[in-house]
Structure formats: structure tokens, C-alpha cells
Length: 257
Ligand code: NAP
View (cartoon, rainbow, N blue to C red):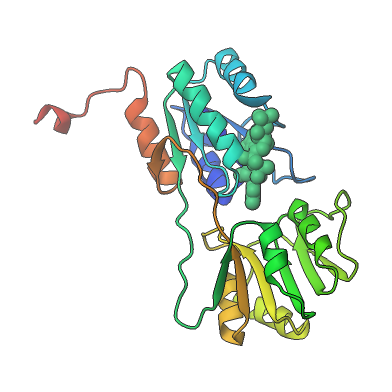
């Protein structure tokens, strides 16, 4: 069965690993190309946008794709909307791995905002020491709040973004550790953390560290993300794919034997 995985996340990598060793599936993973050195994938990989809904439809037809798994990040809403439209028009089954959001725990102080721009505004008029744990393209929003001091951690250097003047850049890719995150926030005397509600374990350590230190978290809300059949993880995506395989053997229990 020919499968397209829309990737760029931990779940997509897990699914890719599972399908790579399963002879029932021929998977291709698609990455947007946002990071300069993406981790190597054990299945054929294509990199870069498809060219909107029409481009994605053309790719699916050319590949004779039989199912799509949207395993993109909770904040990647455009590609998900394109996947829903393209799969509906071609009648290709689509499942989406839905990563639960983090919920505030006792001791957390979260200030919800709608966007990176709103987060920059929410920091207020008094100068603060702010840790930005965001994608590099989102850092530009903080140029409009130049009176704060920032520490920003990104996977690739934000060379292509206009940054606020007082910013220290760190390179890093999860998973992160709560002890190290606590030390980082203490060392940099951070008093506000700006984060997306990414969910999952890989980047949760900063939220734990902020709780320990009583640091305010300005939390950027998730966008509305369209989806196909919702599954909760890579294993559930494989089960869903198994049920859609053409010519699969009927199981004895399904016949009531
Ligand atoms: P987006 O806003 O939903 O997508 C913008 C455009 O990028 C899409 O219209 C599509 O271009 C292209 N694109 C996105 N994901 C793609 C994929 N997996 N394969 C091929 N093209 C893709 O997404 P984004 O926020 O830029 O995120 C891009 C990628 O980074 C996603 O794969 C996502 O899983 C990953 N990521 C995102 C975040 C985040 O916070 N947004 C965080 C971690 C990882 P065309 O219309 O030309 O096809």
C-alpha cells in the first residue's frame, strides 16, 4: 500500500520507522524543508512545498498514493487544510495524528495569547528578561518590543529574520531535560517564558522548569487545524492503515469464528 506521511514531528519519525520495516507498506515522507539538516529518514523523502492543494493533488495522483497520514505539528495548519481538501477531492483516505495539548498543572501560571505578535504585546511596557522557545520565523514578532532582553533557542540560526536588538541566540533541538532547562532559566534570570502549546514530551521540560521557578508562561494558542480521521499516535496510524489495505485477508474473528 502506498502511503504519504506529512512529517516534521516526532510522531512522523516514529511512523516512518514503523512503516520502513513493514513490507505491506511503501511509504514516502514529506518535509517542508524548514530546517537545514533534517534527521535522516529510513524511507524515501521528498522536501519542499507541493504548491498548494493543486500541487498536492498532482503529487498524490502521480505517486498513486492510497492513504495519507498527516503527522505535522499542531501549529502547521496550512498543510493540514491542504491535505483535507486534496484527499477529499481524490477520495484518498486521510488520518491525522492529533497530539494532545498540554494542560496547566497546579503551580503553572499561563497567560494565553492568540499569536506571537500578541505575545510580544503581552510582555508589557516594563523591561523583562524573556526566554523565547519558538520557531525562528516567529522571532521577528518581538522586534516590535525592543525594550526587553531576550534569550531565544531555535534549531537553525534565524539569519533570515529581523530580530529585536537585545537578543542572545542559542541553538538546540529537543528532547530537553527539566534539570538543564531549570538551570538555563535560572542562569539567564528569565522572568517570562513565551511558548507554543506543542504538546508531547520532547519540549515539555521548559514548562516544568517554569513551574518550579514560578515563572510566567505566555502561551500562544493552537490554531484550528483541519483533520482527517483522528488517531492518537504512530501505532494507531498503522492500525488505521492496516484496516484500509486493499485485498487484506479477512480475520477469523471478523467472520464470528
Ligand atoms: P504550514 O504553515 O501548515 O505550511 C505552510 C506551507 O509549507 C504549506 O502550505 C506547504 O506548502 C508547506 N509544507 C508544510 N508542511 C509540509 C510538509 N510536511 N511537506 C511538504 N510541504 C509542507 O506549516 P509550517 O508551520 O510552516 O510547518 C512546516 C513543517 O514544520 C511541518 O511539516 C510541521 O510539521 C513542521 N513543524 C512546524 C512547527 C510549527 O510550530 N509550525 C513546529 C515544528 C515542526 P505548499 O502549499 O507549497 O504545499
